[in-house]
Image 1: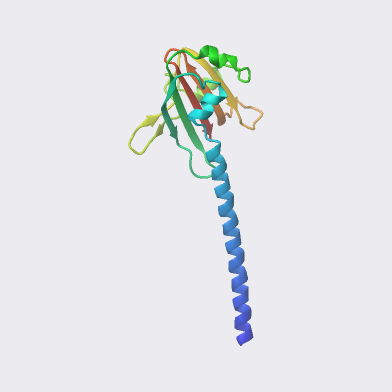
Image 2 (image 1 turned 90 degrees about the vertical axis):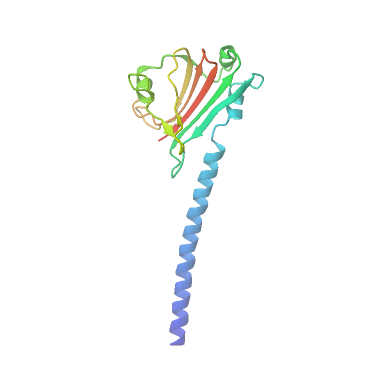
Length: 177
């Protein structure tokens, strides 16, 4: 009888250890994934560095993130206000190809309704709304990361930079849906 109890105890311990190991592994993978997402989140500094704007006077208008859950779906919107026009500076960087606004029709349909109100609006707990505004005069860059043959039709994973030439505001919208 005693041997059976010891054998049963060992079986339970092995099963518990296996379950604990699996749970611990899942926890570590989730933590690693969240860490990777946090370090890849755009900041004011990374936006300034991407376009060599270190010497331009600016301040952060707002930064809002609706990213959460698994697999970190949501949107991040960052807006930088500059004191003067930075169009020349943006075009100096040959790595990015800026396109003049308005957006191409397929892109515009994903971002705005016909009356130019935004498709995606993120609301904070205290009722503040964050969204990419309609910009009439400026430039944009769309970096579509969708892994699909019909990219513009199923554009849900993208980075969008928009420069408002009238207001001197550089917007960054990262969408992952």
